[in-house]
Length: 577
Image 1 (tube, rainbow, N blue to C red):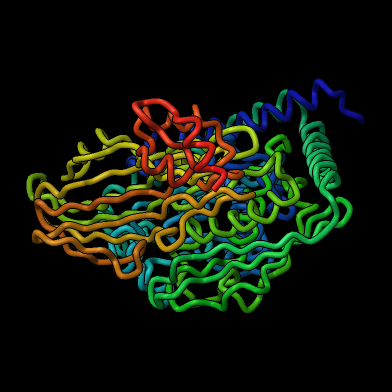
Image 2: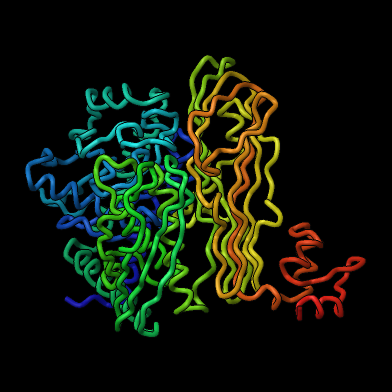
């Protein structure tokens, strides 16, 4: 049977809608602000045979695109090998082991089989960022961990739900190893509910269009995605494109880590080689293979957003396994920074390489940090412990036609900063400042977008703060002559003194008490093109809006302002010099 174009299009949209409804259910039902408000989660449909991606929610984190494919595949393989109990209808597996196709421990995956006629038709999977998974510091972001056990509870695939019933023993083990355990039941129920909604909606599609029709559509959609990606790649000039990106430090050794990338374009395939990158590191900035692969996929998704998401879109992207580097972490290497930070440096390396080949399609480097700030303590007014997790946006890089987006979400996802009002209701904190970070965008013909500046004060009780951020040593790199964005900034005010983390963007277990404050400035995006080619009137407008000072206009863009206008003659001389 050959599907007509209309039916194929309808089924493509229907499968996408199933995933979108799972995403919406998960966020609406979750208890934790990081899921309910920040949308740090994702849902998808995966092949019964090998776990390959069929569809993923449009509002899910792109970094989970490849990751959930590999974790689902691992569950299937472990079941086949007898290392995991075989499934029955209503079973839901839980897994967060980074080395089994995961990210960091806080990203907890649920995997559920969908049965048709007593056979598994496909798997549904989702990932949610739990605000705590145990470990040495509240929130799981241990900036100086040297082994994964220090980062929290590690779960191989086990059945958390058996025939639709929550297993009380597995649940008790989890709750005994995490902080604020009584609140996790809301997230667990929400995560399971999302899968059940997906199952119900998928069965409705299968009942209406018949199983064999949907199977044919899935195969055709995968074929077309691969074909479309190959067509995009074929238009790139053959050659090798090289780039480097840098991680501030690993949190233990205060030296930068290098991501060295060579992209070899041949015909309609791209080969990504990271073999020149730094060796495995002592601290938590190692990346497991699944995260490294997914980082390349999401970067190419940014470049070619028209290609539908499915396993077919990944087929022309060949990533050589970066053995012997920190981008292929093996047990027991710590990995808490891999998903939120290292993944974005990998994407930045891809952008920096591909902008040479596709200057009209690729941007300068974005902020490239999720701004992970975890705060755990006790609220004496409410008589309970809490774990607060703050993520932050930053500037995107300029491109060939536009300035960069200001305060955009991280490169790896659609997650947004939770509303200040929600955070102040849920936790004993006060945001004293929350605004754009003026001047942070990198100079260019099209400047980078601006980061975020905020300051949060502890109102009562005692707390411990931990940071796993990046781009504190090096700002996001400009492209084709553009300037770098401003680096990340962290300052802690306690006992009347200022404290800057020695690793700039990473530190853990900072003791705080009522009245102490944390000030964060997120990076601006890199500039695109020669700053002296920027329209002088656009620079004047930026200064009028407070984005840059007159001095910055002169130093960064060569534009001289006088009495609120552009001094054309002086500007011409400044730029000529």
